[in-house]
Image (tube, rainbow, N blue to C red; front, side, top):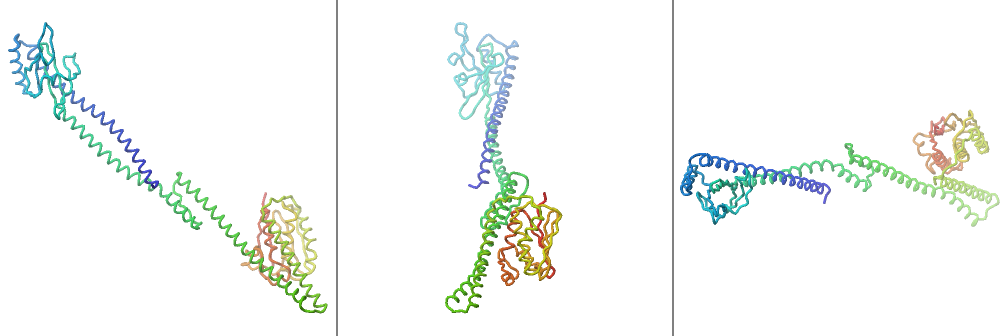
Length: 473
């Protein structure tokens, strides 16, 4: 069962139970009121009849000591009132005691079909100093209120009032309540359904969005409306979807980088291995003079050294990618510059390139060996791009280290790619200089572990400035 249907049924059942309880309470109250009204009307008629009797017989000289004469007078009295629902019964005295039962009484006046037993065998509730009492009488399909007035002359006057109209009122009230209850249920069902449809629209949208994300559409988001719990759920869902999308893109990018890395690695390994294999086959199959043999062995040695450099850088990349925590210390920048200069001296002397320092006593939080490796890589790249006799400058200020050269520059479209492993702008020049395209990739990883960003300012034919931005504070 759908949530909307289940909640609708639950609400309707709750409303139905509440309505039935209210209906029962109202019905009982109305029943008491209707029966009280009917009883009051019947008693008023009995009071009126009793007053008329008292006016005629008890308080006037219109009396007789003879029961026969008195009975004739009573019959005349009741006939003149045109009341067909009045019964008069006279009881006998035995040994001075009045006996009120059917065997010792007779009808003085009775135009109904009721017998003496019918009027006597009832439970009467006494009121008005016990001279007037009342009870109920069921005869055939009708119900009557029977009021009894006991006089001083061994007489009991009964008056019948049909209360079927009260039953009709109750029956009509019951029908009205059923209709009202049904109408309330229908209206309530419609209102609840509309409210739930509006309220659960966000959940349906959330479900549809989750299904789209499950199919791989990670850019899908739910439209958050309002400030209720469902809106909070939607906000949390969007945050989760954002995290999933970011993580997925990261994994996809990582997978792409790995695929590219392996492809480039295979390509880079194939060239020196082919050269080594070719020269080795030549040495094995062809008899060469000493000069040619020495040249072949020199090529083999050069390619082996290139493979060694490549493997070392590969291992360095893998070590830095393990996210091991670095031990950082405050390192004077002058110490970094001087160490970089010593390591790059022979490299720079081959092209007559000069390395200049500019610092003002700055210190940077870094791992000394790794940061030195960054500067060596940047100086090495600057040297490869420089011409004979150029100058490379290492400059330090408050939160930056700059590596400037006046070499060939980097094309704008290539600047975002040079940090990828094995990427080389000029592959022939890089291989000629012993490069494999791993230096800047290694530099980028080291800087990432230091929370240092790398900015590149370059213009073709004018040179390049590599800017290391250290975190502030």
